[in-house]
Amino acid sequence: MIFCNKCGGLCSSRKQGEKTIFVCRCCGTEQTEKKGHVKACIICESIEKSEKKVSIFNEDIETKKLPTVKHGCPKCSNLKAVFWMKQTRASDEPPTRFYKCLKCGYISREYE
Image 1: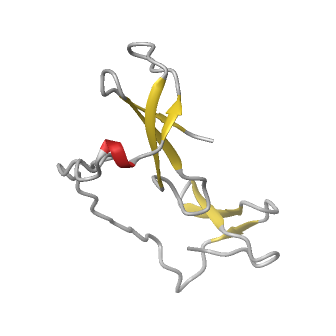
Image 2 (image 1 turned 180 degrees about the horizontal axis):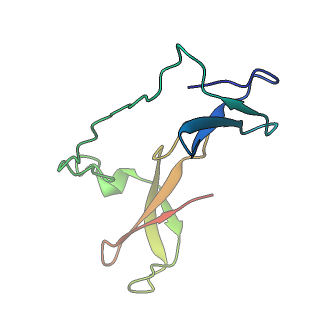
């Protein structure tokens, strides 16, 4: 990575003939390649897809123990459901509310 001599911002590179020009993303200052700088830097990160499924509802929790609320089921239009909350996104985001229809068992989710 090359940083701007003027403002310290990160520079992006582009080829101009035989030369490599570094342009600051913040202030637009252009500078040429200097001796001793790394010409190329490759960062590789391997990300493997997990075949493991994440359960949003723990079957060990009995439906009878969850609070019952009035919530319209999008599948069967029943108005009674149980609900629970789970942190599914970043910790600074509100938790996701899940509703399980007491008639058909359909599970829907609601974000804030």
